[in-house]
Length: 261
Image (cartoon, rainbow, N blue to C red; front, side, top):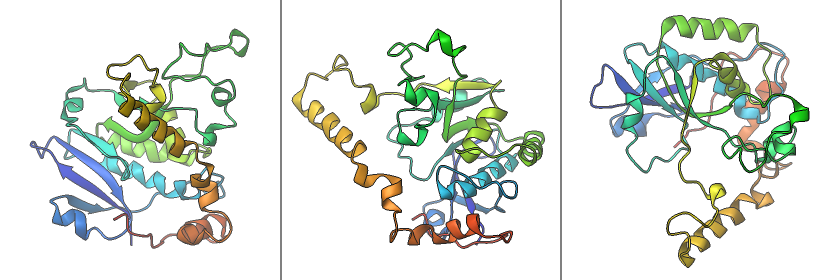
């Protein structure tokens, strides 16, 4: 089964829509009014398979959504993102740019990066200054789990051609998109997040709020929930097809993926 892109139309169907990525059966999303489009997978260049997460290989298929030129603007959302408020206002941002939220380098998957090692946060640069001896600060880097973009066939073919000559890096298509759109990237404010808690924000003196923040951090720092532990020997069955595709000698043109539901 080919991966599918799910389009949830906004009020103006011909201009704007939300899109996410589904691997598996699309019956549920069809039932709630989403438009499902089957797309062909996009694989990284051959023999380039060292990613931070094995399943990142399938994320290159995200590039197909630039083909949806019957929409003027689209907001891409990873399937595990929860939206609690209306974000339609993002569609009103000026055209000609790529909008996304800056990533956070405090996660262990970034442990080899200088940002992680010196505890530098691009979202809160005032907390740790970038050392002068390390040269200029790195360019802003966004998380590709959510972004506002403009479908365009010229951009689409340029993405695919550039991919052919760009060696994949640890974070697969996220690194690639950061490189490709570096000159037109505009940050979206990250909003209130538990890791930005200082105790000075409104209502943060309430004990129930402090309890919620503490519980969030307990889960975040629980190493038993880390990806590597979850996929330790004996726990890799769920990623079997993808891991096999990455380590096999043959070129894989088709794979069955579990449902996202």
